[in-house]
Image (tube, rainbow, N blue to C red; front, top):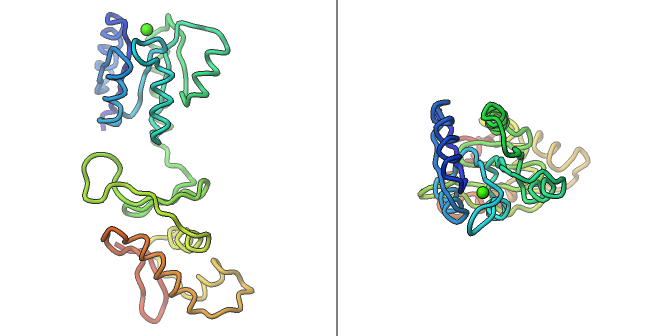
Length: 233
Ligand code: CA
């Protein structure tokens, strides 16, 4: 798969040079020469990595980065900067940049940083459990369903769950397709000392389904009659 890199650099000659180098490495490259066009491309095409010059007409690279992060983008960002002061680096990192390269830079150094960030972005996040179009983040306790980016019948949406609904879904997501018995679910989600009615599972499964299928999405939490529950297509 070819990685798509966005390069926003107002020095046209430098932009052309970097673009050619990246293309010859096999990357697909989009180039913008000012901040606003860069932001538009980033939002439209969701690149795999962005290289942003710090000083840009219209919108600085740092501000561009901040705006991307504000809309939830996690694209790796490398800032190009002619400044070498520590306070500037901190401002860039505060804005959500992942790295910076100081001008003048060697193209080999930039290429090495790009490879490192693309590799890191491809490693699966151990805190994120996924099944079909459903994802759950154990660290932030966020749940999303739907397709990210582009036109889709079911664009990605956040799902608000209560603490117990979250725990139940997290447990089912640890082993998609595996059937969990009612006892297993009670013990893991409600605890060994739970003394209440075991119908509580049905009640919470119903809540979960309502929220997961709110827009008419297909069912993922299935009842396995006489046994328990499983996540399935
Ligand atoms: Ca510049």
